[in-house]
Length: 340
Image (tube, rainbow, N blue to C red; front, side):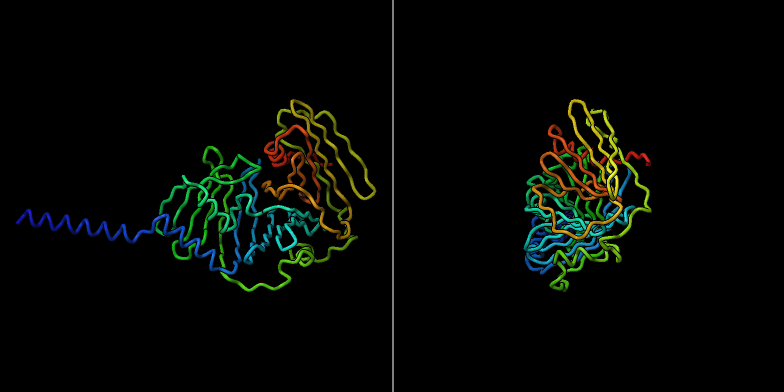
């Protein structure tokens, strides 16, 4: 009797474990559902908050993503400490653009963005990173599927890992953590809304329309006056071992320019320029380079330079000796202040 009872108990326990195993989705099943979701959807709208801890001071963005299948994107980034620095990444049939509407400034790229690099706020990019990593790890929590994968930041090797949280019910991301080589989270994207198959207007991905969105000041004109603002020169905290050897201030007809020369094992020049009036809207400046997130702003990276805008100031960092990673690191560290 005892043996039969014990056998029944073992059978019941085995049956319970079998049911549990059958009920829990595998990595392959989750990936199949994610792929199907991407294939079947017509597009999406996303709202998220991105926290960057890549510099001396943490930075926070509000992100508004619009995607229309197959390859139209509109990523609006609003900075919590720089109202004038709101930017947008726009991709349509004509190319890829980085827009700074408040300064009437835009760049045009011939690039494979967003497919050439990891994008922590785009569903397709997250799924591609999982698929491309044969060593991706998979686990589950009560409400999420969690993937641990490598990233694909071609211009920045300082962020090699990421953790992706996928909601079990909606199969959409809720949290992405991007880590450094010590697995310390430096970038966190918290999703607050994910709307599938929304309705778009024809003008939603048109360059000229987006240059005058609500991310720009409503009363911007070619003669907008910025002269009431205090011009603050910023200096890099990281210099790749070089030292400041020359500081030259140049008065412009409608602004000021600062030229900083650094010399050492690797020399570089940093130019800062601030205009009192916003120039008239012009055609986008075409560049051969990459789009990089510096933490406090979006930058334009080429083989030997990086350009960005922050708090109404144009920054241009150039060197024939620095690597792309060093250009990015110096640009991210331009936070040391000297008030003029």
